[in-house]
Length: 310
Image (cartoon, rainbow, N blue to C red):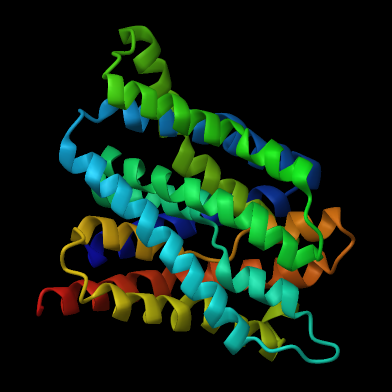
């Protein structure tokens, strides 16, 4: 499993490089990059989610595992919220809101779904979709309040009615009622779903290219936040996941991978919207994206090795 993640991480890095090259050679500009991201988030990812639910046959085991995913994801966010408050303290001149948001919330849509798909196929995307439901609930309530100090109810309602959430609802209906998709529609959905990994990683590379990566690498604080996001908090979760052997290893692994993904690009976008330091947010995003190519396979390798001993 760790080898699959390592191999997939290298592929994702190469796809990131395609996005970086596209931006640096001016094939795509900043506006195009944003449109690229929106296309993935608003069209490709919802189709992928619907397709994943439609392709999986109903089993009681899957329903139980989906509920375990909901519970484990919610508990994981609670632990990370508490951990981020302890590890990232308030200090004059320190932008702890950006740092805490970056440490808690991951780029689980872009990075997580391709990895879950590589690990477990449509079943992995099935569990990842359940995780995304919890992510949206936490990120658009606690996350936005923590980052901005205000509760934007309209934004919350809008996000809970986003295409991805609608896709999850449609997918669940198809799954529970086992409604078959017409062959031509199903093939179309499959083609669009196959775009998710390459387009998501290219869009991520375009975002990384816009950050001053060299400047970010000179900031010691970015390394600390990256360590909290990629190593410390995931390691705590991994240790806590080990003894709960009644939860299937597939569920625990998917949740761990999604929590250990690099910082959410959402932080940069929200900082831009609310006039905060989006450059600092983009630095953390870029550095965690770069380092996650090494930390995620190592984390899963250690976790799977330890679970085999229990």
